[in-house]
Image 1 (tube, one colour):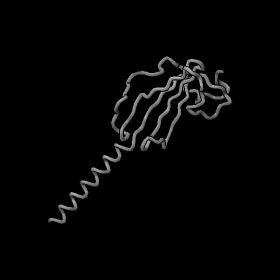
Image 2 (cartoon, helix red, strand yellow):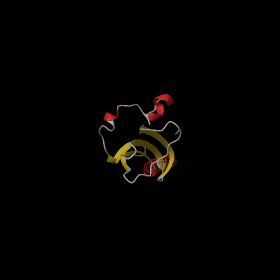
Image 3 (tube, rainbow, N blue to C red):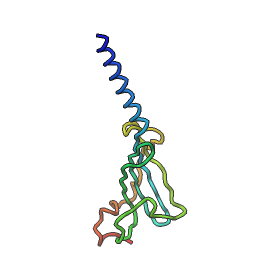
Image 4 (cartoon, helix red, strand yellow):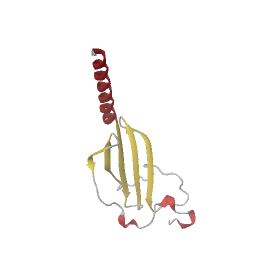
Length: 123
């Protein structure tokens, strides 16, 4: 009976420790970049472990040149480039500060630039 209680206590401690480690080390972020100079907008979704991104998805909005096939957050060097975090999920589950809800880019009208065929992309 005593050994069973120790096993239950050890398992409870291990599960609690892993949960605390997960929520302390893993998060996901949704960043928004807007540049009024080149009319480029970028959504960046990152999964990070200990602050280092291990997965990143980019969604480009706005005017894009047809010869561009790959975009990175550093493509725009304009001084008025504005980057801000919309959501941050601790442990990829709990939305914590900042958790800015609301509609973003409702007036853009066009689908994302990377989904347009090359002959329809505006310059």
